[in-house]
Image (cartoon, rainbow, N blue to C red; front, side, top):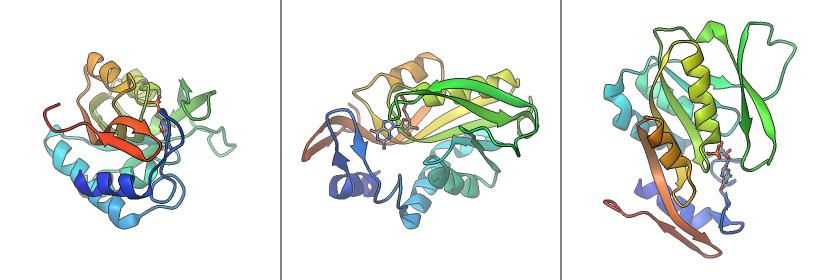
Length: 193
Ligand code: 5GP
């Protein structure tokens, strides 16, 4: 998605060869117009998959996922990373190792929002090693529901996440695919590459 790639080139900061900082439009401050375009693009790519709900993980997945859910006209569920005293329902929990925080958190979704007939579109902000998306996929499958696709805003294609998700049988659509990261030099996977 050209507009997203341009934004990454103008505002993204490669902290090192592995980590991209995009806190001016996605991870701290949020660009709502860009998120709306992203939601429309996800909806265009997944419209025929028959999703009944969108599932993401708090907090940075929520902005793009809400616009995808709006476009597809389905509810959005965001998995919780922190236990809360208001979370009194039966929970489905999966350990997920965080690439950026370098720790495992227990990601939870209330059973009452997922049922066996649901067809779930998973959306996340980044794809690195695939831990978050695979964890969400496991939560969905524990309820008997199915995953109908995984939409990623920024995929780091030099890391193994995409291959792991494809191997697990998922359709993966990433709106920007980063081939290599270096200070002042971010390159993208070309179409057909
Ligand atoms: P994975 O689970 O695929 O290993 O990593 C994806 C998760 O880690 C995303 O939910 C995102 O929050 C975080 N993440 C991974 N790589 C990056 C990165 O380069 N920059 C930022 N800002 N977050 C990342």
